[in-house]
Length: 324
Image 1 (cartoon, one colour):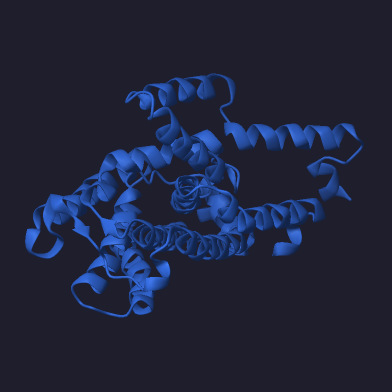
Image 2: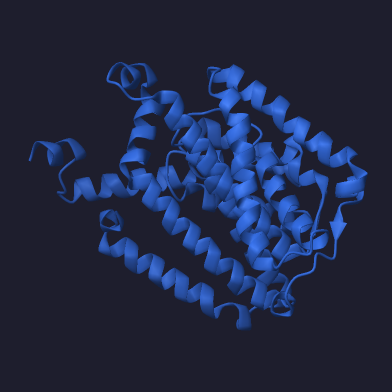
């Protein structure tokens, strides 16, 4: 499946990975932290894009599963006193199970009703976390999650999170290019025709939700590794909207677009937020401009430009490849 990547793409990602590996010693601690936060947020945005951009589902409250993974990991370590690696494995599975339960109801709805039902059920998860003080400490959150000493420094957490970020990206790309991923994109484009040729549309959509919520749970675990704490805002609908904007900003019909969208959003929130608390106003203006001038997103625009450039150089179009 990875053979579909061109040699130039492989070299580009290899050079980028080497650069990311050598950056922390040369960067101040704050910038290392911001870069690590971008990895976590990008993984979350990528998981949402699996169902929104590639599956065509209105997953409006995806952040709820991010919070479920984070809280499951924190509670397993903080209250159940389980080893970190056991909690690391169990938390994404719990998030995926939550996605299975909620998705089982939602896939029976269509378009907007799917999204509205998911917002309602996701908000129910937020209310449980916010109100159940005996278990979750309510709006105080959980602080000082016990983690191994090797994760106490920002640089070690950076390499730990980078490793799992890259690993998840490889797995997600393999899923994206697999027959299941291609079928999911076909369902996005024409669910009626897919159902007519014998594809179980609901089953594929439910599988996509479970896979996406599992990776959202992994992102939640990595957030706890970075912050050593967890709080109810992770399950609030505002975060879900922010993730959705990341996919739009980067290009939700591309594979790597949400990574770029997450990087832009985190950078705006961090560096513009130093000078003004109204950084969301700048993000809103950018989003309006994007909708009018770059509806395919920044990465989608770049991919189209590169594709046109190759076509002008004499490369055959996609249809010509199929005919040959």
